[in-house]
Length: 164
Figure: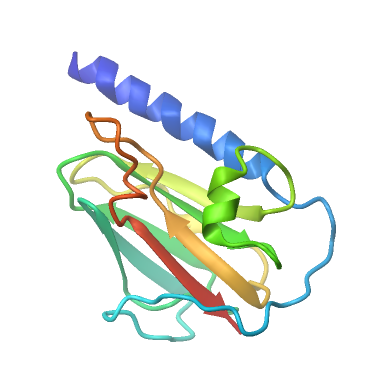
């Protein structure tokens, strides 16, 4: 039963990764967003860290630093009691995180930077960022569901920030 649950979670993560990839904008337009409001964890500091460590708990992300244009890798450790994923995406100009999430596959709302998954007590595969992150609004979300059908994202497992 436990293996079946893990397999279903892994399948959900794969399906979601394909969904987020489908949301990417086919245009090469990289204009920055100005004046957009974002939230940032009080424990997060802006830094030019090459690697940003993200710790997932039930139901929050804790970042070692806010990613910058210089960030090259995102690592993810799950310290929660449930499986968690981390989807890292750029929210395209003119859209909000809620709009990107609700778009359900329509292109143009977000660009997938990378994703990873970790079972409780494990570390996910690092997200490698191959080119500098462009200015704009970004988000990290966990899109898995609880046994009661609530999205981890809706329970607070999200972090939005701006890269200038």
